[in-house]
Amino acid sequence: MERYPQALEAYQEATKLNSTNSDSWKKQGDVLFRLDNFTPAIAAYNQALELDPSASEVSNRKGQALFQLQQYEAALVMQDAALGREQLNPQFLSDRAETLLQLGQYDEALGLFNQVQTIEPTNIKLWQDKVLVLEALNRPQEAEQV
Image (cartoon, rainbow, N blue to C red; front, top):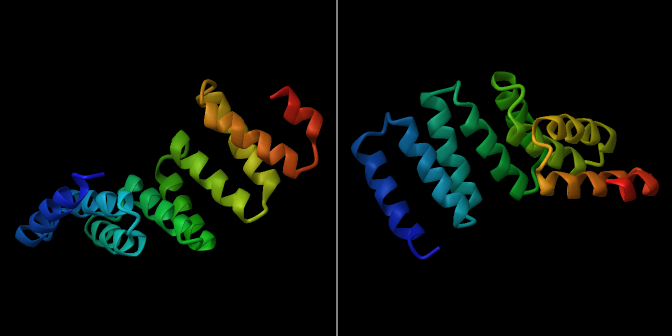
């Protein structure tokens, strides 16, 4: 954590020197995200997406920042944009499932967790999240079997 402020300064300087480098904007957003500065992170991701609208990772990271601000509907829009370009990306699928979980859309979240499970069967966090969904769906026996 102690080097993030220095990294932020470096990326801010990089974007001043070359404001058309989408990767510098993305990395600036990533550092801001790690510093829990989600609104400025979203602004940096917006700049990156303006320069490269097809950057699925940036769309997903913006969705994660919106999620942290509890802007779940807006997060879904960004997650859908990312998944539109990389439909089987397990991180994108998991992030969308987490958002659906927060919105109480448990059946759809469970479907995504099951999909990710086939891609990454050893992902422990996925198994934990799946248990939470099954419990929310009042399916304790299935949750115990996970």
